[in-house]
Image (tube, rainbow, N blue to C red; front, side, top):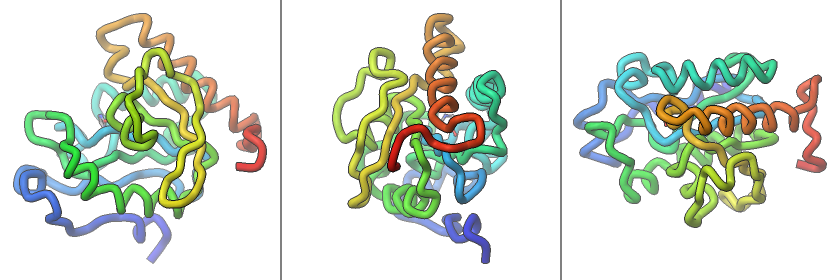
Amino acid sequence: MGEMERLDVTECTRCPDLADCRSRIVNGVGPADADLLFVGEGPGKNEDERGEPFVGRSGTVLDDALQAAGLARADVRITNCVRCRPPENRDPRTGELDNCREYLEREIDAVEPTVIVTLGKVPSEHLLGRDVGVTGEAGDTFDCDIAGETRPVMVSVHPAATLYDRSQKETFESTIQRAADLMGSGGQSTLGSF
Ligand code: URA
């Protein structure tokens, strides 16, 4: 079994409400040794149907910003805090985030990304463990203790926010550009020893 398949959750009923409603579990995609790991909130309708994170309108926004920054979706890893679609697209509950945390930590440990970019308030607060004002803190990177390791986490607004607010589009694109710049042109990090 390859590294990527090993990271896949194939069966889980820890959150009965989510397990009842989902079409499928949506695992992370992208190289298991990616330098950049994007973490979203949880699957929406499109993701639940297709079994891949960020494949709806938010995914198009992310893909476009990656492309503008000289990256392709295939270069990065993309995952979510919870792997099952919350009904009516509500925010995942604290207990659901907690139940899925082990899978996310396992993925982060295996991928060992140079930078984790949190897409929106829910993943930012989940990984930073505090209240986050995503617009004000977008593009800032914080050292974060995740499962006993210090990991750099860059806050971003959620790509969906750009669909309603033009200024969020600029914020989002410059955050993605900043994350790409940290990788350097050859995919090498400029973050020092991380
Ligand atoms: N929004 C998210 O946070 N994650 C997805 O996978 C899609 C939309």
